[in-house]
Length: 346
Image: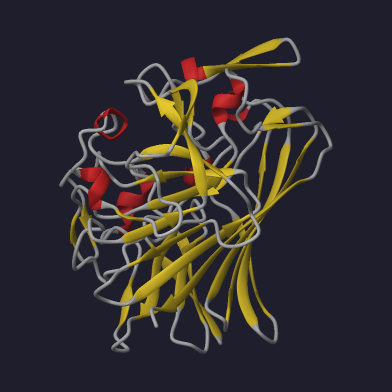
């Protein structure tokens, strides 16, 4: 195992964490952005399985949030405002009338303090940042530590820890786009996904939850048991697929958290990635709105090029009952973990 560091874009640090099994992870101190994850396929070709820009200057705008830490609140906050303890807090509207992913100056745009570390069986990076009271419109001074850990079992753990001196909405996630074909040889259309979820949140035309929870039975959202090929939803006439641009951008409620809550497999490369988390659900986004404007390391962006598993609570809880709450009380310890595990199909 080894850790190397270099300066990129003239001002940021990029860390490369490599385990003993051929997997490596590249992380910036800017936005905590994962720029690359190299993973072997069944023919022992080691290739990149996440989306990242060719020109690192593009991370300064990063409209698709590639690889970044998202917060204070991942997802859309309806009407760009919320109420906590009888006070209404206005936020920047950066997605139509709504507030998305912490706003235009969210955690994806800040420099994190970073400390690499190594243990007997793992290597990692600790990222810390203090979000001051009023930053981006949110209450309270928020101290955070996010730890990326890569071990020799090919598990990438993302551990989130935070405390705030005032009650605040908080749900952090990572916005990496995965494509297990390797070096973006194909879209994710033929990737096979399973999710332990019997319900998802219905969206309106602004992609805001209506408050209705929909049963996945007999819909293209039923990824339980044997799962589905993603193209099933891309080609579906089901209104909830069409409303987001013929794909998925929905919050799935997890049925249980005993085993992996989601898996994705590319049948050609044989790569399989599983997701395990103590979060109550996740947004699965299939890059339905991705245009061809940006140049990635392996070619131009295009629709269906990557998939995000945004494990988190639900910002819809600020306006609707029945959703996992994003409210963290003053002094309460916020501790969450998501683990991405890589293996090959047997």
